Image 1 (cartoon, rainbow, N blue to C red):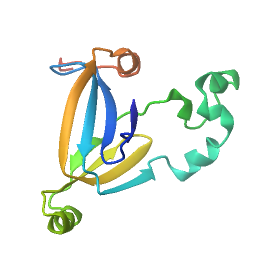
Image 2 (cartoon, helix red, strand yellow; image 1 turned 45 degrees about the vertical axis):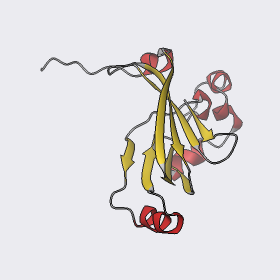
Image 3 (cartoon, helix red, strand yellow; image 1 turned 135 degrees about the vertical axis):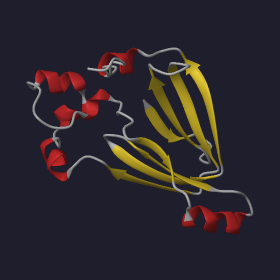
Length: 147
């Protein structure tokens, strides 16, 4: 739903929404003591080219333009798939741990929109609301029954 550095600039936070699992809702996932972060697009080059215009950064403008083919940035959220994965072993985390004298870890978060790789010290999470309206309206749960 949202991501970025906390205002103090040390920690990086993701706001995620889930409608499944033990505790559905919006959760803040905070990576602390971020010493290295890289961001790359996950949108293919040809899709970028089709999605260049300003109509794609505002959902209503995209609708008004007749829903042209391309990536709609204006949804203002991205699907967290394939999601988060720990990088183990991590040469980058080991090098930072040696430099700082504290345990460090590496993770990658990948969505349909971006890939973020970060080296950090610890992870915190907290539920911030029970809101699930966004993900519930766009993600169709798979049936648990066999076909």
